[in-house]
Length: 526
Image 1 (cartoon, helix red, strand yellow):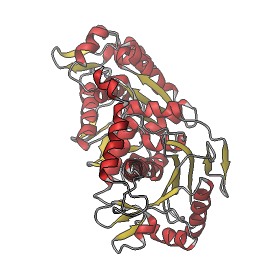
Image 2 (cartoon, rainbow, N blue to C red):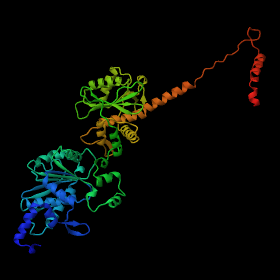
Image 3 (cartoon, helix red, strand yellow):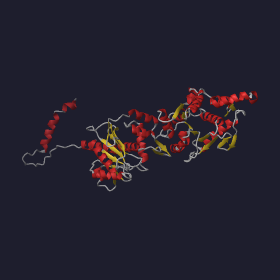
């Protein structure tokens, strides 16, 4: 208490606290416990390590499990920074404005519960989502709007549950310049799948490709948690919830269309291509044409000057093994020529082109080039029809139509093929796309800033293999069975009448038949 210390001792304690946040927090900070009320803040070893990292590194990114007290230790660190440093400007952002405000409230409560003699700066301006100290330091919560923090020079930016902040990639573009004068950043979060700003930044930090210092804090860093605690906590949790809330697992925590376990299996089948060729070296080949095998080539078409890519796969029909792939931005005419040449390389493969929008232009070019094994379907039913039959039908259209009706069907078929290990993927590019192919508002699509050209081409491949190819196989089997059932009869009819040369009377024929039968009578007797 203050009356127990002399002025000299107080000065000594203030200086010591100002130099060491760990000492200050463990000796003078108090926090609200949900059961015990106001208690002294006694940090755990992993929290002490975090304090050291916050002080030693300008940018920190923390991948954490739930309920480790990381928000509380950040709040205490912010109190130390505001109290013992002049004119510090701290901005807090979170998934919701209310969440950011709660962290500011936590900072304020720690500040107000300090001993009077340690509180060397008083709260001068006090608002619900911000407050300012008499030494000029201030903190405030901000919404996740596009202009958040743009007009300020920040000393510290706190991003709470950063993986769950929508559009953080764009927000960071505006926030980063506010730290250019030496400001710091603490981004902490549980995982929320891959592909978002938090995931990319954390992975790059581990590879030392950016300025962030990474920290990984799974559930078991807490000294009071053991396997019995884990089993009790996870009894009613899904696999995804466990990965997100406790295990710090990026892959399993996201709502990917393809289950993380299946993605891991796909990774085990990925191989480096034998050849990288083409005008842009984006045509990858794992296996060339094999005599006797049948192939299909599935293509998605992009304009060639946007963010999307034109892409195609070549699959061996018998095993659904990927043997070639392309992803690039050629012009439409160039792409049509590439498809024609690759199709011929693989034994006049069944060529399936998505016919939405500019895909029609590529199909028209392929018809002009005389490609003889294009995929056709019936309008409305999307039923496969062979090319020679399609030319005589008014209801047939070239290519495959990906519509609001067919898209869920082909995505479901792809998931089924992958789950049952009916398709063999070789491409690392395709595997990476699957990691960012997620459910968003009930629709399967790529994350913002990512592509799904290869993934959707694979989905069409699985659909065609399970429909058109199966129909063709059944028709072939039906034809084989039909022709096999045909027999030839080599029976002669006697058209002569009595008196004609060579006439064999009925009595003679009967007698001859009886004589032939006599030689087999022993079988009947036996």
